[in-house]
Length: 215
Image 1 (tube, rainbow, N blue to C red):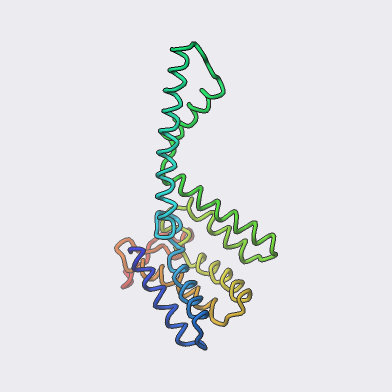
Image 2: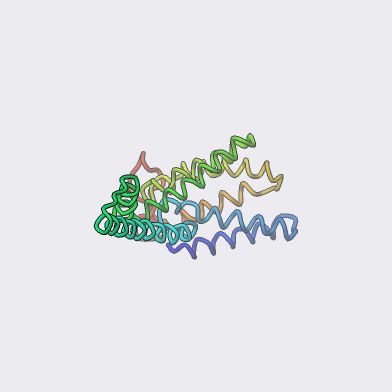
């Protein structure tokens, strides 16, 4: 299912929570933001709306590595032919840049960037004694390397997200954040269960996909 659909569902859940709990603009914005983010988070295991900007940046970075390496190779080649000058360190650098541009895929760079964000969250959680934030960082850091619609699309991931959300609720001191966040994440799995490929809710214990209506 498209990321825009998951986002729309998340926004609706957040808006419903804003209407249910005592209303303030700040709280409404928080419910909607948390629910929308949660509804998209399961797709961190592949290209998604959350990582699309990083995907564009990773494509640019890959092209920069390739062309800067190639340009440096040409310049060094000219210097060697014209002046007989050979620079070993720069030659190694040029070769590394050029090969990285050829070998590394855009997706790998994107995954590294997302994992870097996860590492930052882990550090922030440790530094501020927020275990839930470190848990979120672990989720963000590991998810990009997992199989699409694998572990992030399971009941275990929902439970993990609920635990992270409970910490966020305690930190914000805002009633309903855990419920709204978990509902947003759960909505993603339910929506994906309506697609032809379904969702492996109990993976890896049970590898068959569940589809709605149940088949």
